[in-house]
Amino acid sequence: QVQLHQWGAGLLKPSETLSLTCAVYGESFSGFYWSWIRQPPGKGLEWIGEFNHRGSAKYNPSLKSRVSTSVDTSKRQISLQLSSVTAADTAIYYCVRDLRGPFDYWGQGTLVTVSS
Amino acid sequence: SSELTQDPAVSVALGQTVRITCQGDSLRNFYASWYQQKPGQAPVLVLYGENNRPSEIPDRFSGSSSGNTASLIITGAQAVDEADYHCNSRDRAGNQVVFGGGTKLTVL
Image (cartoon, rainbow over all chains, first blue to last red; front, side, top):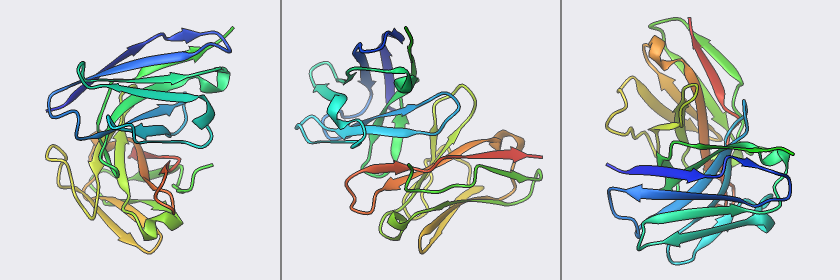
């Protein structure tokens, strides 16, 4: 069984940088891709990007210029940074295990609110 | 904008069969995956690949695909199946992940 536990600041001001971390418990870590997905309140899911521990990464073109991701294999953690946030970035953010098709394990979600 | 299209809402009578669809050109080349999301909870994978279910998902959930349309079929819908259902796949080039807008299923 795999569990993903995520954390990070829940309230940001416009122009600040969003930073979230996700710890992975259970099965092998290094052999998988990981993604971040977000969901604005009352709306659908939006893929942010996918990456692995070898540095292979792809990002949503609409966010690519502001997104940075990282993997710490020693801690079994993945991270997301999103710079220059605006109110449009207000959403629940999920870390997920990415099978390059389905997303089979999801973190509990972190609500990030951007407000002045 | 999403490259996958879902009906915003679908309803089904208790115990009946319902089909939730997901349309997009990329589905001609890539399988859809389906997620169930209940209020206040993270999505849960219910179907993926040709017609595969995680072990904990009941067998009343199945899938089909034809052309540019993938379908999630619930045979004998239960009250606990009332939820939002999201589909996802890759884009036509296979480089990006795309989601449908989600379908709210009501069980009457």
